[in-house]
Amino acid sequence: MKKFFLLLLLSLVMTGCSLIPTATAPAPTTISWEEHEMIISKMSHWAAAGKIGIRTPDDSQSATLSWTQNKQAYRISLSGPLGQGGATISGDPHSSTLEIAGEQPMAAGTPEELLSLRLGWKIPVNDAQYWIKGIPSPNSTYDLSLTNNRLASLTQQGWEIEYHSYVEANKTSLPRKLTMTREALKLTLILRNWRIID
Image 1: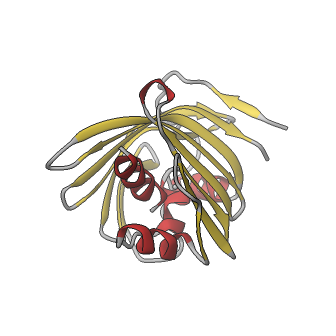
Image 2: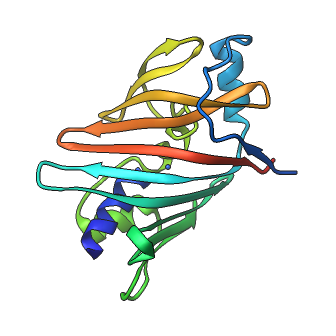
Image 3: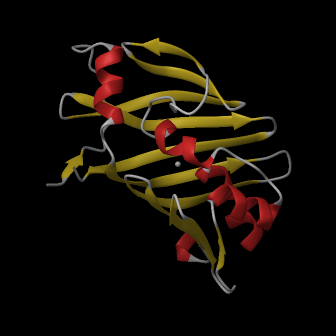
């Protein structure tokens, strides 16, 4: 079970207050993709909550998700059904800490280094904070397609990200449901609540 939560966390991290409604809404078309991307890229302090599902050739599981991002500082927590078990990774550009229920915390200089040491995997941790908001990361090249001036699909760092629905808020929109696929790993995120803090 601990390894499962680590796998979920690893896969995820690769990502006044206004509460965004939970109902699915079509992406607004009143502004262009370029304007939308600029608005979302300036959204640096936010929180999202929902569920994540993970599917591999051998297993399929789900967990609750809580992700808070404040500029480059992050805290991503996962917990299993009925609150059993869990894992949290938190940090900033200078350090990263992984906490797993029942284990001693682990620390490293970067989340990529930490997760590589723990599981031997390397993923683009810093890119995930952009993908979850529905924009490409500025850190590497990418290919994308748009529907109604919003991301429909994104290919970056070997990941295929599909955006299935959005919620509307403050004349813009944020992802409600997206899937991330790389090789045999598929993640499904359903974000029921977004909170914009700045």
